Length: 223
Ligand code: IYR
Image 1 (cartoon, rainbow, N blue to C red):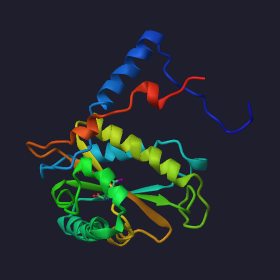
Image 2 (cartoon, rainbow, N blue to C red; image 1 turned 120 degrees about the vertical axis):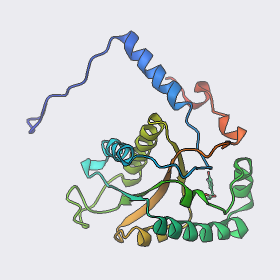
Image 3 (cartoon, protein in one colour; image 1 turned 180 degrees about the vertical axis):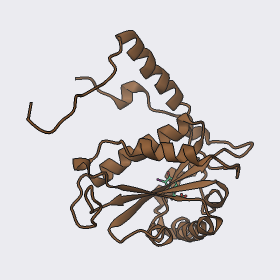
Image 4 (cartoon, protein in one colour; image 1 turned 90 degrees about the vertical axis):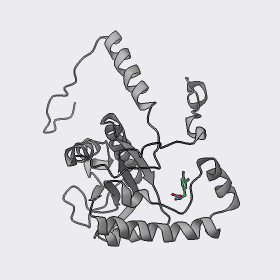
């Protein structure tokens, strides 16, 4: 092993039975996650959002530069600004910018240009990918595997919020440069997605299409 400044690798060793049971139990809970498009305005404690972002911040990433920033929006004014700008982009998208093929692919989800949840949900976590900055966030040092790193962090964020019993929606208006202005982030940060967080509205539904998951045999090969 290389003689680096290092600390012991510590990981609780589980017996195989416990290990299998834990993997299957987390799988079963994650299987219940659904993307939610109908949110109530019921408040959600800030501590949950903080913990989820801290969990996301542990994601494996390029050179440990941790190239992410989470702008947490709860003010009604900023939520309204985000909704208005997003709906404008979505109107263009649904009214012609998107290809016929893309619109057909979205049809089973029933999405449209109305995004009331951007105002109703108590929290919007706007995720930014830092193209530059390094661990010191100097805005200059090159970052690596930025999309991969931030993508993994978003997965961990969403998994933690689901574990906390909250509903989420990954919203990706296109283009989404307006998020940089509204969230007052610098030019070298690229908005990646908005994670909408809250409780589902009473009577919320999900499209049946969302329940169709590819089976293990289809998504894996064993060599
Ligand atoms: N951003 C649009 C369109 C959209 C695109 C995909 I791919 C989705 O999985 C869902 C929606 C919207 O939010 O309506």
